[in-house]
Amino acid sequence: ADRQTLLSFLGGAAGYAPASGQIVGILKQLHETMSKSLADATADEEAAVKSFKELIAAKTKEVEALTAAVEAKTTLIGELGVKLVQMKEDLDDTQKGLLADKKF
Image (tube, rainbow, N blue to C red; front, side):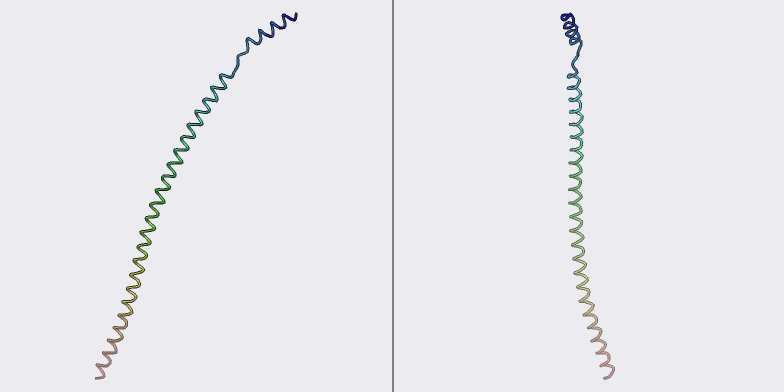
């Protein structure tokens, strides 16, 4: 009877098919999928970083150009302010001269 039980046990063990091959296959497929996802995400991130750097460079140039324009306009305002004061003084001098000529 013991022999029969032992043979039955060993016979049952022969029917067992380990699933480790399937598990390894699933893990390999999972690794490939995750590696591809990581590569895609890395490529997307690198593209975003490149785009961001290009945007920053363009905005920096724009700021520099606008700063130069503001400085030029500020200089022009200063020069026009000086000319306006000179013209007012010339007008005042001309009016005084006209008044003096009328009195003469």
